[in-house]
Image (spheres, rainbow, N blue to C red):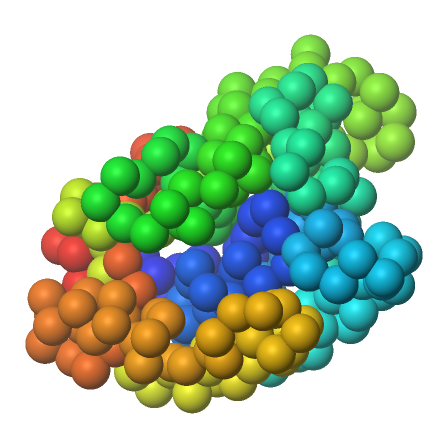
Length: 250
């Protein structure tokens, strides 16, 4: 299936802000083409800060507002939370069950998720344990569980019928086989990242965020591979056999 043909897309990720950093440009490009994109965030973001005086409920509310603002910048329709705590995600049947519900709810042709393995030649933050768990649970939920009428029959009682996804894309570097030109929407990606003010320096104790530090270099490197200014790169996982693409460029 070609990029232009995706009409329903679901992004499943671990923390508020993951989607914007990992594939915000692709999300913006999809919505600009008319696709419906929805988000599923596995955690509530309540441990993603350094202020011990702030309650979990306060930070959860702040991060939910930031995520909704970022989603609005990118044209995302809905944001749903599975409510786990940061640092606690595991590939459990319970988590897979909840992801299957969202896959059946939104019936995506394409799922964007994170890398389900540790990437040793990239910054360790990309291989956060929650990232890997969210991604692996999503892959199992996608196949075989979401399409199986015998998996989670309680969801049938809720009205969520089996659904088969066409493709899953995970962010990739050296082994990328799909590179998306995001030059025209890179400013939207940057604006969406800026919405996550609680995570970008100041009270976090981290250096102030700069596009030129992250994710600018990776976007430029991916773009150079296809002769554009900025791009995001992915490894594709085919679930439902479709017409083969004609190369990595889209």
